[in-house]
Length: 317
Image (cartoon, helix red, strand yellow):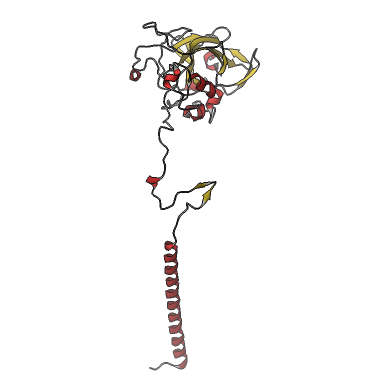
């Protein structure tokens, strides 16, 4: 049967529309292909783009050819001790008290990692420079430490903590600890010892200015503990730091000069710059742990520090 006039017209219109759409698709694809070729043919180099006076490496430059920071410039930090126990956490105070008679505001002193070199059972002595096994004395610039230990009372004042055991330990002028097998000092006890706080909450130590070792700024470890018989009722641990410029001056003189100037400043030390282990301070914990250093004569130093902690647990029945 033949098509009528209107049917023929409609069929012709559909055929034209299909051809028009097909042609449009072909043109669109052709344009996209041409644009893609143009984009890939443009030379890409960001070396000519300024970046605050520096140049950015070319995007087609291999990663292996770029300058890399060496591990020697940023030594890996020492391993951090596990989370503190309940007894250790309870030893921290986030309160503020007024230390008299010096009238110095002291916030709760933050804790830091014990580190791998703590050894319990060291001698009860004030002068820790000698080694009991052979009587030898560590050489170095004398450092006299005066540490005051306080607790915060209900009135916000600082009460001296009597009868607390304060241990200190640190490296010698060449960065070596005693009682460490891999340093060849097993059985040695130099630069280690403890004292009991007096009625004023004070202990005195005579030692030498510490040396440095790889990965750490110069520091002194300190630990405060209280015992009820064999039960430990308080355990607080931290570290003390000295001024960067004094550290450098000291290490320009023998015997420190044999080892050379410190590799790291305080601020480059991961422990100093990191958070406190009791979570009271989020960063730069070490700035709260700087010894107050003064020259005590021409060849020695006096370092003082106030420790403010929470000893409430000791008095709980």
